[in-house]
Structure formats: C-alpha cells, structure tokens
Length: 194
Image (cartoon, helix red, strand yellow):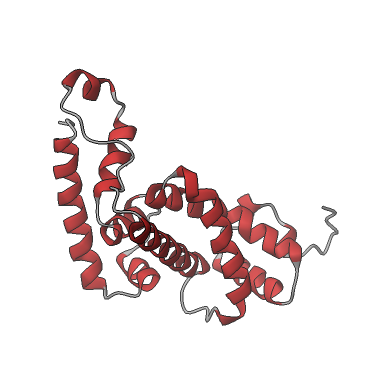
C-alpha cells in the first residue's frame, strides 16, 4: 500500500486505529466503497471478534462465523447509526451470529455443547491446564450467559456497551454476569478446579 503525504486514515496500520474519530472516518470511507478502509477495520477488529467466536462456538466454526460477521457488517454498515462505538455494534452482530449458530446446532443435534465430557479421574483433571478447564466450563454455560461473560471479561466492554450489543437492559447484564460467574465457579468445581 502506497502512502502519500496527505494520506487518508484508511491507510494507517491497524495498530494506529485507536480514536473514535478515526473509526468514524473509516466507517464513512467504507460506506463510500473504500476497500483499504474495509481492510483497516477488519485488521483492527477481527482478532477480538474471532476470540469471541472461539469462546462461544469453538475453533471449528469460529473462522467461518467471523468471516460471516464481517461480511454482514460491511453489507449493513450504512445502517450503523454511530450512537455507539463501531466495535459495540460489531460485537452485537457477532453475538447474534454465534447465538443463531448455536440454536441451529442445537436443533440439529441434542448432543451437549461440551467439547469433552466431565471425568472423575482426578489425575487427568490435575494435568489439564487452567485454560482448557475454563473453556470446558464456559462451554457448559447457557449461550446467553456465556455471551455476557465473554463480552465483559474477554473484551472489556462496559455494562452499557454489553446491553447495547445484546439488546438487553443494563440491569439484565448485571444479573446475567453474576449468574454466569456463579455457574462458572460451579462448573469449574465439577471439573476438578479448586
């Protein structure tokens, strides 16, 4: 990519995209059809969306769903009102996509969402690393609780941003987050984590 002296914000590296004004300019450029602005937004936001998808639906489907979310975002970008941060709106799209995927998956199969069943073999549980236990415990949570927990703990969104992302009241965010933490503690205990 060639940058001139009067370079547009859409040609800045993703690492320099920190201000809301910069994102607003990139959104405007995207709506106008600027491919480099689309690339910049994708580079800035894709790893966080992918991380959310991995935790919500697993690695197997995360790539495809992340791509779907960005395709959907770029198609609907002219509908973005700018009342919230672009990332908040993007997380709403991602969460909705993940929840829709999980509902379809649930209808197709009555199998558990857990990637591996719980075991009583203490030696095996002791050898599991904490990240694997956490992932297994997260997979046991209801998808709506998991979404709130991940948006708060993994992505650092505020209660207001989570409420906007999920289309629920802020009070519901707090109660779901509290319930998610309690259920997560319970699931981790069941999996042998102390």
